[in-house]
Image (cartoon, rainbow, N blue to C red; front, top):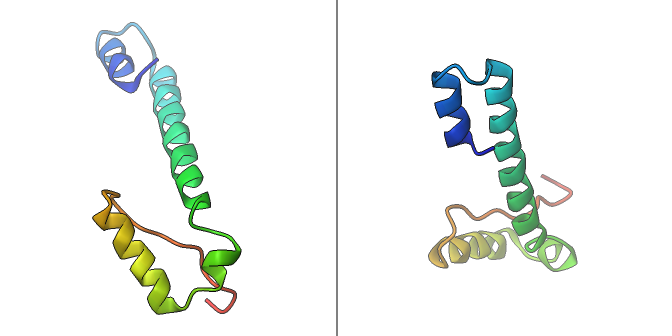
Length: 78
């Protein structure tokens, strides 16, 4: 059930608050999985070898390519 439909059903009294929260949690879980999938593409040995300036460049390039945010993995010293 999508969150919009769940909100409408909750407002109409057809579902309870727990079901509304469950729909919201499902949406957030899906969004988190999508973010984790995107982040996995900018992680690994290649990113660990980058300097801080190079990592910042990757983040800026992500935004220029249309992302809302750019993030890379932290290094062992951070």
